[in-house]
Image (cartoon, rainbow, N blue to C red):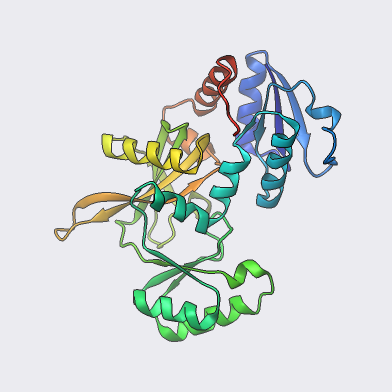
Length: 294
């Protein structure tokens, strides 16, 4: 199997995948997207004769464009350009989850400071303001008062980029100090962990503590449905536990699906050999000629 790896920086996750691929005797072609020139008329030589491409771009914009080029070149890519487009944008992500009947936090989108403030006031305090494109918990704000809302909205409105003028407002979910990350391949769980923190943000990138999580039937169902909703592939599905009146876990809500998912923390937190499981799935997809890009 000849596998192309799209990257802009080789992190621990990519090193694990590269090592697993090479140990199995696969031919690996590393494609540094910072140095490549993409021709709209003809595929660059590096893309020829590839059986599949893995998108591991650190930059969202590079991921979106390079996967689209792979589609144009007729090269199967994981994840597909469609999946990348849906997952990269929180608005599209939320719409896909809601449309598939997946429980997801109540969310409103506004395009001016005044309408955004109205949405925030409708939710009440606290609520959460997120950038429509972003990862690792960056630029997210828990808003506790009207004065804080006005200040944050003013800052966003003057930042310049049009994305900051799309105000993505979400209810604050009173989770029990943790959330859940499930790594899934076409909806099937590879492994899962909980990320715990005293801070309201529980991303591993923000320093949350991680430990293995046992996936039950309800989580398995939600992960499968969420994966289908965004187009499938190798995904990180993030869930929060919702509490009932007695303070016990009543259900789960899916707040996000990630398409260029990192897994080094999961690999360390569980007994699962994550890169081996990922390559098992990849080999199966290629061998069975499963369509991995629409």
